[in-house]
Amino acid sequence: MCCTDSNEPAIVRRARCRAWIQLICEIISFVLSILTVRDAGYLGASASCIGLVGTIGVLARCGRVSRTFTLLCWFNVIAMMISIIHVALLLHLAETVHDWCCELEETNPGEVRSLLIALSCWFLVTVLVRLACLGPSGAFAARKAPLRAIIIPMGHPVPPEQAQVVVGVPVQPLPAAQNLPVTDAR
Image (cartoon, rainbow, N blue to C red):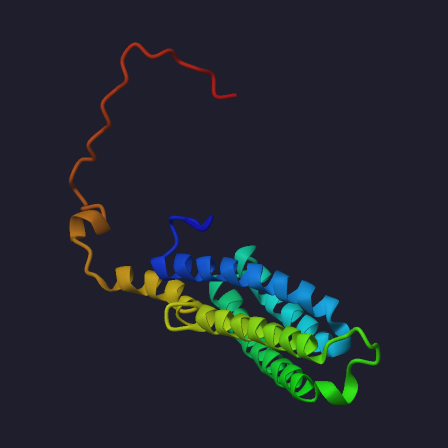
C-alpha cells in the first residue's frame, strides 16, 4: 500500500496514504509558487511550506500519532486559508490582466490570463487535496484512532484463567528439549 505499518489501525494507514498524496501535491505547488513569485507566488510558497511541515511530521512518525495528526489538521487549515487568498489574488490578476501586463508587444494578454487561471485551478486542487487529507476518514479521525485501539480491548472482560495464576494449582512445565546442546550463556 502506501509504505505504512500493518500494525496500525486502518484509519491511520488510510490517513498516511492521503498524506503521501498531499506531499506530492505540496511539492508541485511549492515549485509552481517559486516560479511565479511575481504573481503572488510568495503566498503559495508559504502555504506549501506550512502544508509540507504537517505532512512530513505525519509521514516521519514524529512523536505521538494523535499529536502529529492534530498538527497536520491545524497546518492544513492554515495552509488552506492562505491558498484561498492566493487563488483569489490570481483570479483578480487574471481579470485585470490588461491593466498591468503586456509591456512587450509579443506578449499576449489572453495567454497570460490562461496561465493565471490554470495556476489558480492547480492551487484549488491542492486545497481540495488538503481538505481530503483532513476529511472524516483522514487526519481528523486518525488523531483519535490510537486511543480507541487501546480503550476497546481493555473494556472486554478477561477470563480468570488468563488474567491471574490460581493459587494452589501446579504450574505445568514446558516439554523438555531433548538432545539439544547446552550453550554457555556468557
